[in-house]
Length: 268
Image 1 (cartoon, rainbow, N blue to C red):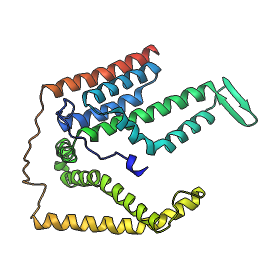
Image 2 (cartoon, one colour; image 1 turned 90 degrees about the vertical axis):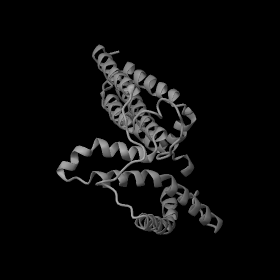
Image 3 (cartoon, helix red, strand yellow; image 1 turned 180 degrees about the vertical axis):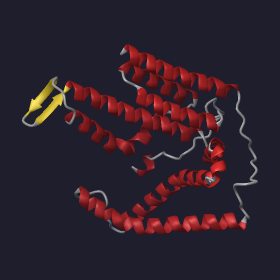
Image 4 (cartoon, rainbow, N blue to C red; image 1 turned 135 degrees about the vertical axis):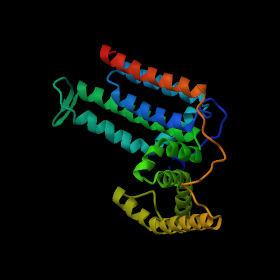
């Protein structure tokens, strides 16, 4: 299960999506999320799905990679569906048995919420799949640069996010290694009730925390030894430049939002 977590991973490529400016991809991700929450009809969900499928095809990301990243979220998705299915009020009863009642409104809302979660997670995964952590850091720093006038530590915040994204796969690999070592020593991590399995995972936390702090200390020491000094006066090997493809991407993002609003107004 841990190996299915793909958040923070970057798949190098030379597609038009990979070549987009990271600022463009960050802004369009925000637009995509906002557009997804504005969807009010099934036609809107179909339009968002078509846009997601088109970007995935352009980026040459296999759908299997997106589905693999969704596997750890199965519990949250199922819980979302159950809560909306059984706890949505309505008079259009579809099924009733004792105190259990399912309405057409609840069924419609459950399907819509599941679709929203799937599209939301898949769309945000595409950002990390097609953008390196360093590019994301540079993009965030440039986008938030006006906050420097308010003495907000923009560079430090961007660096923290970059390090966090970079070390997610590393920590997942470390956790998997510790679990394998515990199983080799006879630890039972896969059977028993849910509370018992949760208690069995507690011994993993101490070595994981120790390993995380050790890696953080080694990273800080390496940065100090190289006289690293970010922020003011820092130069970049690769400068960010907007191109014509970024303008086209913004136009397509605006078209997506406009299409969703039109479909919502028409009730399609």
